[in-house]
Amino acid sequence: MVFHHIPPQAHLATQGQPGNKPGVLLVNLGTPEGTGYRAVRRYLSEFLSDRRVIEGSPLFWQPLLQGVVLTTRPSRSGRAYARVWDTERNESPLRTYTRHQAEKLAEQLAADGVPVAWGMRYGSPSVAQALRTLMEQGCDRIVCLPLYPQYSATTTATANDQLFRVLMKLRNQPAVRTVPSFPDDPDFITAVASSIREEQMHADQPFQMVVASFHGLPQQYVDKGDSYLADCTRTVAGLRAELGMDETNLPMTFQSRFGPTKWLEPYTAPFITGLPAKGIRRIAVVTPCFMADCLETLDEIGHEVREEFMKAGGESFTLVPCLNDSPASIRLLEKLVRRELLGWL
Ligand SMILES: C=CC1=C(C)c2cc3[nH]c(cc4nc(cc5[nH]c(cc1n2)c(C)c5CCC(=O)O)C(CCC(=O)O)=C4C)c(C)c3C=C
Ligand SMILES: [Fe+2]
Ligand SMILES: [Fe+2]
Image (cartoon, rainbow, N blue to C red; front, side, top):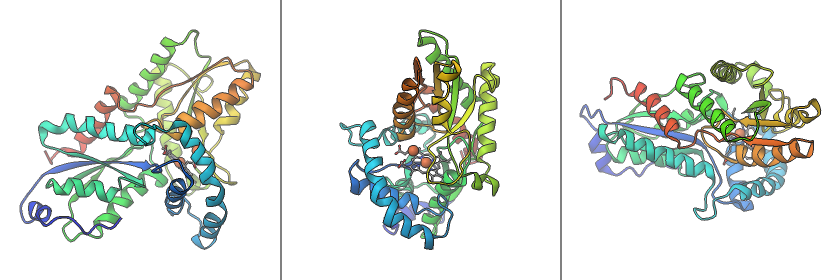
């Protein structure tokens, strides 16, 4: 996204004065514009060309991506997106929830005169558009919150990279603070634990196990120093402590493996489909690495893994919703943002 059309008044508003007008930028991963081959291909091409996501040399990867992956994957992913698509709004749940999070957070910050914008790392609205919205309102101080509880270079870092990439094109840059990951923030842990308790209350029988499924990552990225696994472990430890559970009834697994390399283990799907054979037939699955329900929760877990579990002899399968735009979620976002706003407000 090119970024040279900030109207002159936006420059005036932020120039030469101790403006001190903060704005909040929420950044999420991104999602396609539609479920058709072209839209999904465009989105996947941008996503899978990000060198934070696929670290191998583009000399090898790009021909494979453009020639092989992007001929088959968009149709498969498009069918999956179609299953979760909101046809009325014509958008994916991830986009709806991210927008609602921004709107509700904006209500909480309105009295302080702090606007909130939201952008996607891949696709639209872009991070550039979101930043422009804030700068047009005179914001010269930006708090950037990547919407990932656990840090990974493939998510958090690339969201921040994208903001700084946009700033590279500006003569007058706003000041920027990035919000760190929050894997064991007490409000985060309490909110996720409450969602699990809530689902248990509405279930006919006690869950024999609550599987905490996190998005996977190539093992090699962790070996090279990505702190994602450490962050996931902190989240699970927090949940176990809060719920009085342990690794036997609240195990940690990793989903959405992509490609042939070794990813973090155990893999969610085979782990869950193996449970009925061990006598575990009533389970819940919680996905605490996503702040909003999306393809990976609603379809991969809520549809694909659920079906496999039931076919393997499962009796009941509960997908615990993500925090989405619940009051607890907005309170958490507000707290995280206000901590970074200290000294600016
Ligand atoms: C290929 C490498 C991938 C890495 C590494 C990766 C890490 C990662 N992703 C998320 C969160 C989400 N990923 C989503 C979709 C998605 N992820 C990948 C690949 C990698 N992710 C692909 C190809 C896709 C697209 C869908 C598909 O074809 O399977 C989403 C959902 C977006 C939506 O529109 O709903 C999220 C969210 C995390 C947290 C993470 C790092 C640990
Ligand atoms: Fe992903
Ligand atoms: Fe996936």
